[in-house]
Amino acid sequence: MNQTPDPAPNASGEDATDPRVARRNKLNQLVERGIDPYGSRFDDRKLISQCRELADEVKFVTKEGKTLDLPDFDAGDVDYRQWKTDNGPGEEVGPKVRVAGRIMLARPTGKLIFLNLKDWTGNIQIFIGKNQVGEEDFDLAKLFDLGDLVGAEGRLGRTNTGELTVFAEKLFFLTKMLEPAPEKHAGLTNPDLRQRMRYADLAFNDGVIETFLNRTRIVKSIRQTLDNDGFCEVEGPTLHTIPGGAAARPFMTHHNALDMKLYMRIALELHLKRLMVGGMERVYELGRVYRNEGLSPRHNPEFTMLELYQAYGDYESMMDLTEQIIADAIQATGGDFKREFDGKMVDFTPPFQRATYADLFQKATGIDPTDDEGVMAYAKKLKLETANKHPDVIRNEIFEEKVEDSLEGPIFVIDYPASICPLTKRKRDNPEIAERFELFVLGMEVANAYTELNDPDLQQELFETQLQGQQEEDSMAKMDHDFVRALRYAMPPAGGLGIGIDRLVMLLTGQRSIRDVILFPVLRPETNE
Image 1 (cartoon, rainbow, N blue to C red):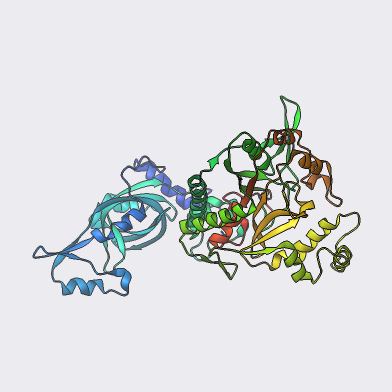
Image 2 (image 1 turned 135 degrees about the vertical axis):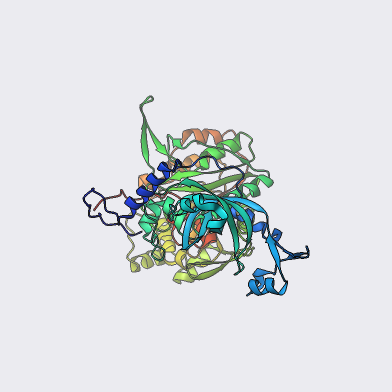
């Protein structure tokens, strides 16, 4: 949105060419007419999508009284004027509707004004004729500006060009917009302004509302999938005494009454597992988590996470459930399993590809991941820091550097080094491998799942052991004594799954930045410079 320059004041202190001044002048004229420029209750309105569903009720009644269906305007070019001529004298009839929305386009032509009105379900044309609405309402329409919220009551019909239109008989003023609308062609394009002024982005940029409505449909679908599978939705605490359940740096705060340090949660895991111990066998939470990390197109410090736990399952169960969740979400947003993202097509048709961490590592590097000397040499070739780091930490840094970005997917990467997965059960035949998977799509991690560790003694041992090379504040190995105590009350064997909702929405809606699927992302402070 272009910034309007400061106007040069005239003798009265106002610049008549300043659009803000012109809008306020129209507001004052509305008040002088006894019209509230901020509107009031507007009952019995139909959403624009509902009006479009009524299109088939628009008919043509001939002079002889015969009712004819209108031609199929979706089938191609239709000369409606000629069609009416061919069917002889008659009159178009249609249902009466009341609509309300924002003016997106206005075309005055003498005694006629055409408006394009938009609500959150779509757009429709409004025909305002002086003879149809009367002189008073026609003068009211002259006070309309782009962006104003107005209402219209009239007959639903078709213009001679076949466009579905509300032929207004009565107008209503609902709210005056005091800021100038974005330029029609330039629009609100600056990414920072779009995210900072999300209200204007939603109001004036095509497709933005639909993206966020699709986000809602995806979240609703996830809940429906899990509810249908016997899961129970719960709400855990967002303030933790110990940050745990993930490798991330937390945000800190202070509780004054208790005089204690608290942390914004970095994961939902440990409290959900406590519920498993208590007998809630299938639980999930869809909630915000907070990680004190940098900003990027794929990272926002505050984001939405799904975490769930299923008693008597494992990571294989979680792979099946992940595919079901994503397939149902796709059905909720249009049903096409092939989606374009960043210029590439992704086929989400289940089942997804599966490959082991070790096989992918060796394929990408040519190094056997069990060869510690070879891994060290390769890390030095990549100029990675190796001093005082556990070999598995180094292996994982190489994996992140050389493998992850090459994974087009969707692909389940399975069987990670056990030492970097302190909350995960080991494979029975190989305790060096953890039963864990991560789902990658176009190099982006979307889901993470485990066969959950439920051995309290091993869990305590892992909490007490810091891997070399991991910073204290970033480590998952935080001792949570109460959680270990909870495991001693017997948590059933289980599968656990986490899905980053924002990244999933990015992929299914084709948005390249996480900020374009979060209504109000974290932004740097606004400056006037």
